[in-house]
Every structure is written in C-alpha cells, then in structure tokens.
Image 1 (spheres, helix red, strand yellow):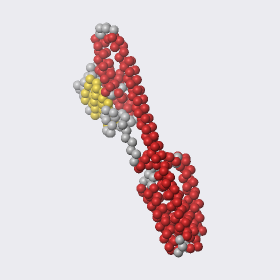
Image 2 (cartoon, helix red, strand yellow):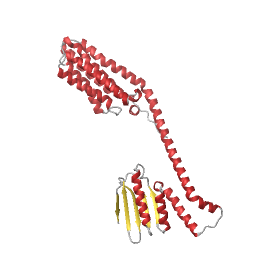
Image 3 (spheres, one colour):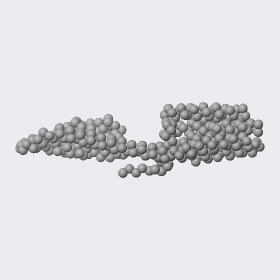
Image 4 (cartoon, one colour):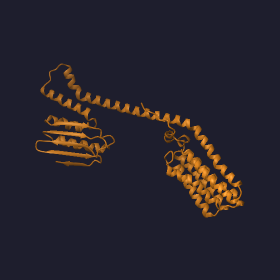
Length: 347
C-alpha cells in the first residue's frame, strides 16, 4: 500500500499555488510580463523625487527579483533565490527614499507598491514567512526615512501598502491549503492508478507474447505426445531443444529473439552447452545497445562446435551491460559489451 504523506511542506512542493492558479507555461510568461511592466511603471514615478542613478539601480533590483520569483521552477523557491528577493525590497526602498525631503515624502509609496507585488508572488511560491520578513524590512527602511525627514505621513501610507497586500495573499494561501491537499491526493492517486494500469498492461502483453511463442514452438510436439504416438530419436532431441528454449524464455526473456534463439538451438544441436541469464541490466538500455549484445551472442553461438557458451545480462548499475563467455577445448574467449555499446574481446 502506498503511503501518502500530507505534510504541508510536501503539499507545497508537490502541488503548489502556482499549479492551482494555472501559473504555468504561457500563462506564467504573461503574468511575468504584466508584473515586470507594473514594476517599471511604478519605479519610474520615483524619477521626479530621487536621483536617476538610484532609481535605475532600484529598478534593476526589483525587475530581477520579480523575474526570479516567477521563472525559477522549484516550489518552494530555493533559499538563495528567496534571500535575494527578500533583500530586494528593503534595498530598492532604501535607494529611492534616502534622498527624499519632506516635500516629496509621498513618493515613498511607489517602491513599496512594487515590493508588495513581489512579496505577494513570494507567498504564492511557498515562502510566506520570508515574504513577511521582506515586508518588515521595507517598513523599517520607511520608518528610518520618516525619522530623517521629520514627517510620518508618507511612511505610514507606504507601510500600509505591502502589509495590506501580503496580508490578503497570506490569508488566501491559508484558506486555499485544504484544496491544495485534496488536489495533491487526487493527483497522487491518479499517478498510482496509471502506473498500476501500465504494469498490468505490460504483464498482459508479456503473457500473451509468451503464450503465442509456446503455442508456436511446442504445440506440434505436445499434440504428438497427447495422441500417444511413440516419439522417434529425432523427436526426443526436438523435445530436449524445445525444453531448453522455453527455459531460456524464463531465465532471460529480454534476450529472446528469433536470431538468438535459432543460434542457441543450433549450438545445442551440435553439443554445445548454452546458458542464457538476464539479471535486469537491459532496463533503460537503448534498443541499439541491446541489439549489439544479441549480435555478439549470436556470432559466438554460431561459431561454437563444442564446450559451452554463457550469455549474461548483468544487473543495473554496472559499467558492463552484458558478457558472452565461450569455453572451447582449444580456446576461451570473453566478450564484454558496456552500457555505451562498446565491445571488447579478451582471450
């Protein structure tokens, strides 16, 4: 039984507010464009009260923070990215308010508008606590500027903007969390069900393939036995070869092919001991690499007239994918095929 973990952090990572709000693909890029245009328009309002260099520096900081808040794919956002976004608000605010006088105190609000939007996106990306830390930093910068200017009117207005915006988004995020949990559970159940159905379909396909192969190679001789006919020496030899071929299908299903099975049958008929083993290394291997293993094994089996040939697919995680060992009275040969399809032969 699959255990479903309902911890909030896993919920945020598995099915965040971005998925719930559809902020993926083209919608996310449109949202990013709107956010960046909004940032630029608000930040340019500071040009009438602050030095251009300070406004442009603050603009760059906020534009980069807004882009990172949406472009980085991981939910919740990685802490280094989160740290930059949190610091961007107070830094940009300090750049634009440090040159204000009492006459232009109302211009404090423009940068805090931008910060409120960026912090709201940060909440949507699963970093609510960090967003509130950024809001606190902006409020502190505005308070220091108000003390320097000697008026609190602009600072109060500027502080209310991010506090109100982030409060609303935070409440929304908390309220919507049960819906996130339900959607995540549904998605996990759908994934588990799809995996189970795929496994069953693969098992059914393999069973049908094996039955068809059994019907093709064993039915004639089984019908002879069922009819009570006395088997000839040639038919008994045929039974021995069929039994070995069927055993190959159980021991090494990934090695079974018309060419390799035919080569193994021919080698056994010549008195060669043939062993095929499959320890699962073919899983995930490209088709052409598998074919290279089968070709190498087929060549060795066709060339053998005595002794033994062992073909083995090694377990997953090995550098060598498969080995072909040929032991003959006059020579021994080992062929290795690695996961990149390289073939090496040693004697």
